[in-house]
Image 1 (spheres, helix red, strand yellow):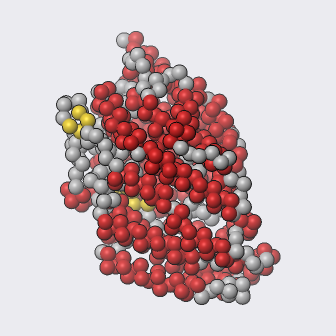
Image 2: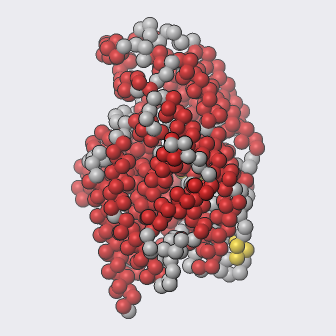
Length: 608
């Protein structure tokens, strides 16, 4: 399982202790089938409430309660099938299970499609009265308040039912992209630095770009994008379909745009998106200054896109294997307190939260998953490196957020919105950086860690904001009737890169195809929240390190709050106001400070 292994192993070759414990959800597929049938059997019961939810507070509460009971079981059915499918996306059996699970989601959504319009046929005054007078209904007070805010955007029962049934069709673009990118697409192998054949995959692409041999980096870059270029028409069609899907739902629900719908759903003012782009654009000179530092330290006549991930300095001190990485993460997150540390350590050491290694057919990337009634699950594609350690710390932040939310919130609020989702993950990364720098003495190692932090800003604020601009641009094009052809997409994406990277880099033709491999473009205005979340995390991690226990208590209260309040309010309670540009500006100031430190050390090292 080391970086020297160039063959992608079979699933059966992975040690059991490095696999997630999916059997903790269902022992086998027979048990999954029983749960599947149980959810199916509850659908008629849910439909039996049609025309009755308006009868009384008691009936409304009972309808919501039974909806939640079915929903909790459905989540388990879906998560199990999803995880098993992702273990090997070429396994037709689990493809079938996952397809059935998604179909069950559609049927469940159709069965309860009348809930929102029927509840909204009750006057707001009556709903408030029922909630105040019937104590069991108070559990749903915040949910009903949110529903009242959506009154102008909820359709008739018949229309809601049709939209629910249509979702299985309209969601196909993202699924097709995933199958093409992860299962069907193949990449030409390359020759590694030792003259051996090395496989190229989405899972090990970044690792290959970190190789100190420039030919390996260039060949991997060329190999990957050659395959995406060969599928450019299909990929453009899929992305166009996704954007049109977003526009369709926005127009159907009486929103001014797809972005307005996505942000209103999470109660985020649209100015948050715009001020992010504005502040980041105002600081692109810092980003380009960092690129010039990279070019200088790598001693390159020309900086190319395949040079953007290789470490600026070499350091054997941070060549982490999985076990070492776990130890470092556990140690670095001790400032978050004993409760946090104990739960996280148990998840890593005993409870099978993590599926560690890449295997043949396994979905690429990394994520945290799980359901209200399950433990968290983390997918990795481990390739021994400090980047993988940071990724694990990141996903553990999501998992711990879910762990605390599920433990302290009832099911209606047992999740959190995507606006706050990236905060906990990034706080973990920043605390890890702080801990590593504290015990590092050599200037070269300090520069290595500073670069790691600068890369965090590069990838999560600058890069994701560029993605956000691209997402907004392609939605505007569709709204104005323009077709998203491969040429239009390549041109728009290339121009945006030129704005962000400036004159600091040589523009390889392949970068025009990068849009075609970004899965987050199928998530409907998700990416901007990486940047806002990172900025909020910078502020919160600084407070945790500077203030200690009071800040930790506020932060843990935030993790335990789920969706029990508006996301902006939850972050304000933790100590940061994202409706103002100040957190983004502060993050840019911290980037500049880290850059100045890196430049000073670089000058010292190069003067020797």
